Image (cartoon, rainbow, N blue to C red; front, side, top):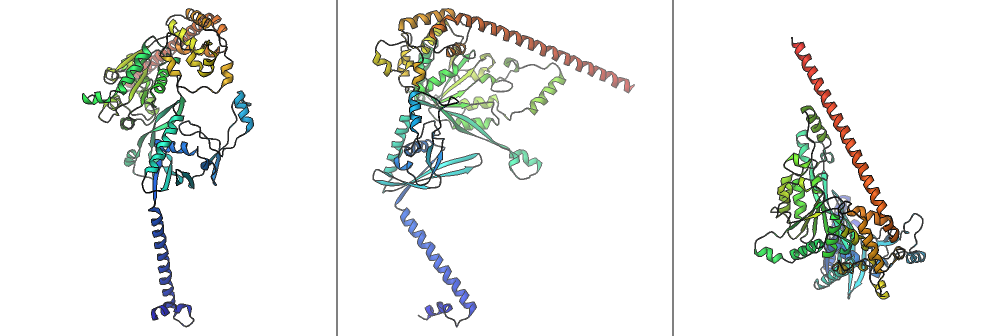
Length: 581
């Protein structure tokens, strides 16, 4: 009792000021400590009943849950939100919530296929819950506390999602993730996701001052995969190659993906490589896009000539590739400045004519260095080295297979070679039928099947099933503008079109470009194809002549420059010898 009176003595008027001050400090510190301890104990008690799961934007479950949340009514009725027109998720799936602002006139325009001024549709306004705000959603008898945050790193920002729930075990969170995964895959089954290899260069300029000998060691490169968009799946029926080529590649890919145990039992690395070589515009990349949609795989694209690409960066990227995907190396012959070969003469690289020109060209290359230090040895090790990923399908495209080093194109790295040539008459006929589908005899089938499925004829029976997996196009206005002819007339027009196309002279891309310009004029397209072939030949001859003239001019200038440099060197030697005498 006496101690309590001593503590309360500062409240009375008759006391020592110094002692009272110390007593107040002790009282305040004790009360604050008790408050913090009680709050911490209470929060710990409450948190002990919650299960919390964290999801990062760098992984797939984040996209699953964000897509699932966009469909929940409570998510659209958030009390704190952001207004945005960017309502498309990271993987190209439209995220539309119940709280979005919609205009009835816009729906009428979409149904009629009309566009406003400028040719584009009006932007839709979406409501997205704000960052760093806790939202509550009721799910299967449990209240979920959902919080979105953003973490900032050296190379950018990364969003995170935290979900907390009161439960005895994590079964409710497992069911939530699986349900979100199923809904996401159902909505994304008609798209192919594309990822690009990104290299981040952290230079010495971002650091404080250091000694010159230490600055060079501060430059580092980091590699990661960046999502680059989602593309609509392309039906196999739209790819017209020589008979049996598509079926062979597709069957080989399916057999490889189903043979993991077979490879493991025999100790063979579970990897498969395909080298697509041939003339430009022959459909190499289009075939890869179509295969990815048919097999349900994502595409990971590596640019070997990108800034900051090195052996270590490429090895890291290859090691982080998922087990089931398509790894694409485009234009392999042009990946390096000096070509992918141990022999410079096999790449078509220009040779130097004198020592002075060699030194000047090397100095220029040094000034124009793009920062890529990738070597052929590093590329080979990343493809089938110890750290290389397994289970992926490697596709490489090149227009000049003769420029590739034999070590790069040997079996084990490139197991299947496919040669792409100019369009044949058979291909021209198949492409024409893909662009102009025939009118089915059954009117019910017309509304149920997409145009691409109707375009498959008897020569392409395996392609009809692949196009059925695609979502029907919503742009009905464009579809109605294409006249639907009878199957007999389409076959006759396709035969006439193929007869007018010269064998192995024009590329598939050229044929496709001509058909695109005449996509609503099938009869006129056939009537004018002969004149178009003549104009294409004249254009190619003109371009060839201009190229020869340009090369001759450059060669003449190089010879004159070399001659002038030689005369200057001889004059300088004569001057030095005269001066010494």
